[in-house]
Amino acid sequence: MSFKTILTVVTDHAHLTETLSQAISMASALDAHLDVLCVGVDRTQTGYYYAGMNAAILQETLNQAREDASGLAAAAKKQMGLSELRWGVTEAVCQLADVARFVASHARFADLAIVPRPYGDDRGIELEPVVEGALFEGQSPVIVLPDGGLELKLPGKIAIGWNESAEALRAVRSALPFLSSAHTVHIVVIDPPKHGPTRSGPGGQVSQYLARHGVKVEIDVLSKTMPRVSDVMRRHVMDINADMVVMGAYGHSRFREAILGGATRNMLETSEVPVVMAH
Picture 1 (cartoon, rainbow, N blue to C red):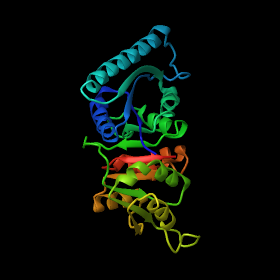
Picture 2: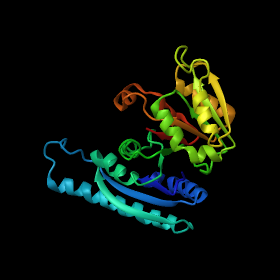
Picture 3: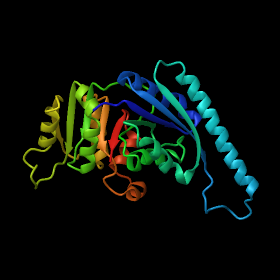
Picture 4: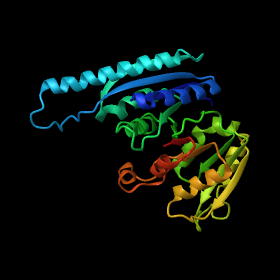
């Protein structure tokens, strides 16, 4: 398995240059084709128009989305033209409610999606459905970029957040090209169960699976010494100086994650390294 088609999605100018720079860096390292999806988002919510909103106002919001898409595509083509990659830029407009489905229709035929962090004060409301569209309907592994703009490259040391879940296993399998090329992979198990078939050797089965793929594995078993699992994971990632985190996405329902928070959301909000997720 290898990553030969990479998709990145841009929806605003504020994050376009950094997101494309990161995607170009990774596509170059993998010798992959890079598809750039430039989406102008019509943020009027169908079914929730306020009283008195007329057709002219609705047309204006659509025109603005078209202008946004055109400007994003022009900037993306200019930046991509400076690279030696194989690439393509697609310009499109869609409503906010349809962002996830639209992104998914493109992510279905990509080996990997690279997107900016969806949470933060300067993040558009459309970035969360961008991530979810690629992950859930698109069934593509996703790299969520941290803030800071450090060069995205093939990782030398990777931390896997392992909890025996189907999502975590899917993430491990999806990230095999990265895991196989890394010089060390840490399987991080936090508060393993005291009962069950893996209680005497947490992480043993997945480490054996990876070792047979030539992955150099270490198992780190940690106690939950902080209120959130994501905090323990983030601190350990910094302690071992990992270049990337691999984890399953949304063990709870997305509604519960949005309202109460969870490991996925908390990691995306705070991680200082790229996070590879799959579901």
